[in-house]
Length: 264
Image (cartoon, rainbow, N blue to C red; front, side):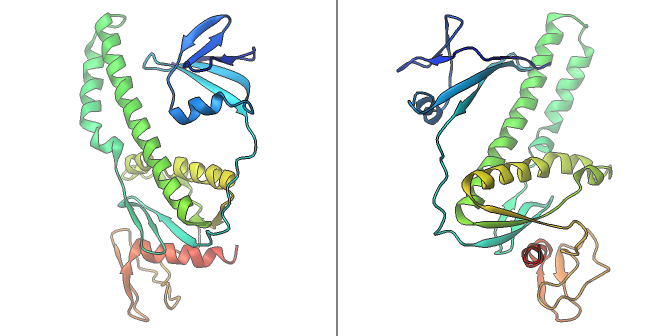
């Protein structure tokens, strides 16, 4: 399991070398060039370091630093969008922008099942069982890293172009009780995405608006306001019986989310 400890001792990053001095020991580390340079800035004050060993037997140093205000100028960004999160597409915005659902876990499910079976057949305490455990842990780590990378890329793209982002409040814990959709909902990681989007928006000066869970964003027509009570999950196209508009179901919901958010 995860093993970690935090050091509040004086930590020093050696200049021109990717080495951290800890209790007089010089330990090599790897990070991106951006963060490597930021750690050596004279205005950067290192507060503490948490050392972590994960299930793949990799070691990490999580460094807490005090930096000057890095807020950006967003006066030229005024666009507002509504975002509908889904399973078929990861998200659809009110202006028609779509992001496909990558389904990282589902695409690797066969490999995970095979490794689980191999691991369960090995003798407990043996080296072969530990080797299988490491392979399985690395597979889960890869999926987690793919998902994190995807979430960061999508959230950055949305925040670079929009000042106000409107979201529906989803009760994920209640939704995964549906055993037919539980795996897909867990794989798509809506909670991780919205949390990432919120903290980035807060840091960059953007605004996140949330609408109530029970507002009929999917069932209401974005053109005339008529509510289609017989809409099912299988209906991917919204056809209004009142005004006759034909629109993608998720696109219609995203437009409604944007409109509902103006009353928040």
